[in-house]
Structure formats: structure tokens, C-alpha cells
Image (cartoon, rainbow, N blue to C red):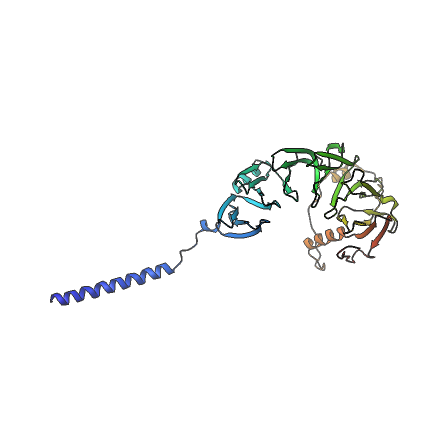
Length: 394
């Protein structure tokens, strides 16, 4: 074989081997590697995106199957990304200077604490978007910025085995860092576009229960009403200084409690107007009606009408004296069996029956209280009749 023929043979061999190798590599590259069980937990879902009011920040949650979730905050003009492990429930202050978010426990820590029968509680993360400084506050159940972004209200968790619903509420001045603490707060609400914070006090033994209003700008705390009973249903009038709340009233002759409606107008004034609607003197509604807490108090836009809900009030059944013997007492001592009986002719399965029963239990008549004339008007004739307030609510 001549040198020329040998050269041509080697060239063809190299060309063939190179072609085969490239084809084999391309085929290998086109075939994706199988997903292993270790990869299952890494599947991600993007959710809950939120822009800051000034449009410079984007916060969004990334959830994974293995619950190694995180909150990501991206500065859009610089593309700088900040990652908060286990962050959720983000909220920007209205001035775009602060970002607050909840911090859940990791799955391993949560399971560990549940096994030890310890409470599982979230923390609060607070990020200064101007300086980049961040702070973590332990054991915060909920938080709300004041509308102007100057203050942050942080609700703590209840103490172990406490009977009342009141917890510590901490108001933080974000510019100075000064904190003001209130105890036994069961419900709170910032005034919309205003300075005041309304709080319901629910203490052990109901000692000191009432409704208070705090102005953090002036440091003035006012008690609007106090009684040894429960309060619920704070309702500010939109962008105004009018406030309403329910005060519980129990009667041993009836199964469920009714409520007194308390309303204040012009709380910014030194002498605000206080209005009271007594359930015992309701006119324009059926007798034995009770004011319920399941229907949120709602103001009309002009502040002249306050809407609430009523239901029929059922009397407590009379106790019948029954002679007992040892056998009947033994039967009464047994715990009832958790057995659910469903008949094939029932149109609803048992879970749906329970949901329907709860919906029926929440049905109520909507009532309009005209504050200027102290007139009460029931809206609708049947519990099944839907009533919707039109814009303006007149």
C-alpha cells in the first residue's frame, strides 16, 4: 500500500469514528436523566407575588414539595435578590420603606416540637428596604402596618392553658424602634387612613374587659366602654373616625347570647357621640330576636346607617327530673360512640350535611340601624332570601 493510499484510509477512518462519536454524544445528550425520589421534593411552585407601592420591589413565595419553602424579594432596578428561608405572608408598608413577613418553622423542627408536644409558632421578619437591615421577632401570630407605614402592630400568641382570648399586642414605632405593649388584647384594628388603633380587651375573669382606642402619635389611650362581659366585632367606618363594636349579653333563659351595639362618631373630637342599640328594645323586628356576632357590623358610606344581623332567640329547654339507678348512671358515664349513620335515600352525604348545617346556622336577617332617627329596619322576609348592599348603602 502506498503512502497516499494509507493516508486516505486513515483519513476515512478518523472521519468515520468522529462522526459516530458525535452522533452517540448527541443521542446521549438528548435523553433526559430519570428523576430520582430525591428529586421529588425539589419541585417548585411560584405563588403570592406582590409589588411594593413604589413599584421598585417584588416579593414572591416559592413553595416546594419537601416544604423547604422560601420568600424571595427582588429589587427590580438593580436585580438584587434577597432570599428568606421559610418566609410567607409578605406585607409592604405604604411608604415602601419596610417589608414584614411571617417565618414558619422548618418541617423537621415542626415535627420535632409536635413529637415533644410543644407549641408550633411563627416568627416575624422585618426588612428595612432602605438600609437592608433585617430583624427577627420571635413568636408573632399576626401583624399589620398602620396605613401610613409609621407603625407596626404585632400580635403575640396566647399563654398556655389560658381561658381568655386576650394576648400581648406590641406597637412598634418604625422610625425610632420604641415599642409599646398592651396586654389581654383579643382583637385590634387600625383606623383606615388615620392614626388610631382600636383594641378589645379580654382578660382572665373578664376583669377590665372593654374597648380602648390608642393614638401612638400622641401616646393617648382612651377607654370607651368597660364591662364584665365579652366584646367582639370591631368595625371602623371607611376613612373616618367612627367606630362600632358588639358587647355580649347573656341570659340564662335563652340558649345563646345576644349583643348590645355600641357606636361612636367623631372619635377625633374631645367629646365624641356615643350611640347604643339595646336588643331588648328593638322595634321593627320580630320579638325574641337576638343580635348575632356572625354578621359583621358595616357602616354606610355617609355614616348614617349601621348594618348588623339578627336571628330568632331560642329559650333554654327545661330540665326534666329523671330518676336514676346504678345501671343508668353507668350508661351515662360512658362516652358516646362516634358513629355516623347515613341512609341511602339521603340526598347529601354526611360531610355535605355537616357543611349545610353550618351554612344554615349562619343564616341571618340583615338589619339597618338609622342612627339619626334610631329607627331599625329589617331587610328581607325569609332567611333564605339573599340581601346585598348596593354601593353607597343607602
